[in-house]
Amino acid sequence: MPERSLSMVATPSLFRLLQVRPLLGRTFADAEGEVGRDQEVILSFGMWRQLYGSDRVVLGRELQLSGRPFTIIGVMPTGFVFIDPEVRMWVPLAFTPAEKTIHHSNNWYNIGRLKPGVRVEQAQAQIDALNAANLDRFPQMKETLINAGFHTMVEPLQHMLIKDVQNILYLLWGASFLVLLIGGLNVASLGLARLTLRRRELAMRLALGAKRVQLIRAFIVENLLAATASGFDLCLAKQCCWACESLG
Image (cartoon, rainbow, N blue to C red; front, side, top):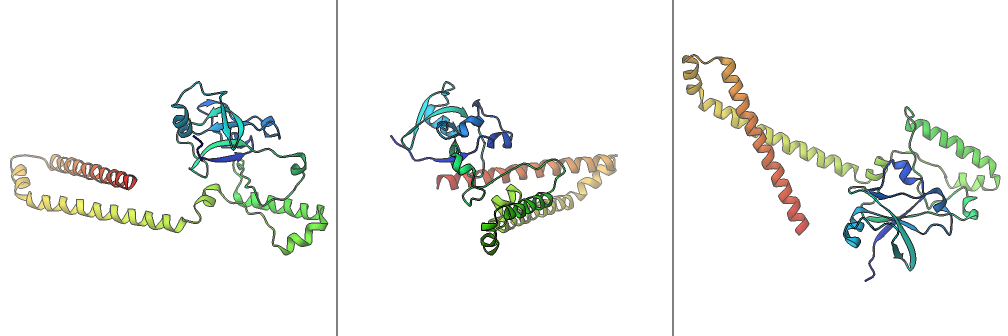
């Protein structure tokens, strides 16, 4: 049965840039970024498990994608996600000789890894200088690009991924901190209440020769056990909520 799945096209250097190794097989070779040699596919862990039941003898098998045959050359490790968690396979991005001569395109994202010690601001300055040099190299396009406000923005990948929901994330973090603070205050209040009720017991222990250090140590241990149990209950409640959301 045909199945609709999301794939990502990427240049062969992507996985080397991300410094991630496949669970099985290999990633794309540079030659597979040429038109006519881009018939390989790398599967996600979930896709491999779903289609082939985690069969380790999957390399070299053929997979039909949009009516074209692709050869499976690798399987990514479990938990590997890049930008879109719905992506279930990767195919090489190939350019024709004519496309390689194009110096501007709005259809692709470029990612890179900064050298140690290099800041984003320094990379932005270098890109700005490169853009200015390219405008001088192509005077016929210079006025059009300037009027269109053409520019290149360098930003951390994490910021690019979360900038649309950053305020919501801050709100969730603040709410989580508030819930933890309330829980901590409740546990502290219970501890003080128990200590007040046990004043007679503590006074009797002191009268029988118990040392203050021993009583303080016992009190700390009891409260640590209570805090640990409270944290375990909170984690269990969250897991139950997540399970209910998944089932719902």
